[in-house]
Length: 325
Image (cartoon, rainbow, N blue to C red; front, top):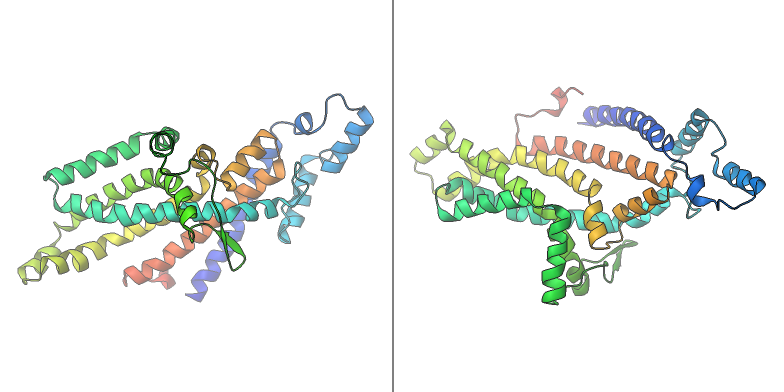
């Protein structure tokens, strides 16, 4: 296990280095933040001083080397707009995004697996068909449109839930969270539901397909032939064997939920990393954009490592010592 984790960490460093080069070149080679950040009517001398202060007067390769030197110590540059460390801005907004993403994935898993299991066990029943029809809607409806409809129905027409913001937070180990307060949950329900819809539909279809396939396997037929109760057959022999692909997909989708919560955060004015990214793109705040993308890459790498470790817990046949990078 230790050797596996060390090997994966080394691979992660290589991936982060490659991604930093791609992201840096891609972001810094497009657009000119000087046109947005500096008054076009400014004197040429003042304009040159501002460009030099931002480090934009140096060649691209030199800017990248400077960025790498700082990244080794955890310095991903200073925001052009806020004049503060870019990583600090992202860390400040990260709890809101992580809270929203985890609640959304929790909703998707808690609802998706039982519904998919039921649809797999009752494929011809009205309930099973209704579940699959609902999953098709979850795939088809655009996230931004669903968010607007949720606001229209539950905030405007019924007045039950707030349409924007995060609500009051409570500090837990120095991190502000809103799910510990009633008003925080009221602010969280709509954006979390909107963000969970697509993942819910995905898990329903994945669980149903796995259930239908598992029911045809010999070990399930043998368990039924031994006279085991239906609950034990489903819980031990079916569900346990279909959990591995579900855990894999759920883990990877958690990373995508964190990375692509931008639309939901914009619709509901949720103060997370996604909204910060949109604002930074509009202002061409390059250090914040680069720092955000690298943080997302690091999150994906961490999630992949956790998923690999969970393999061994769910399936004893998987041996991490036999894994190859």
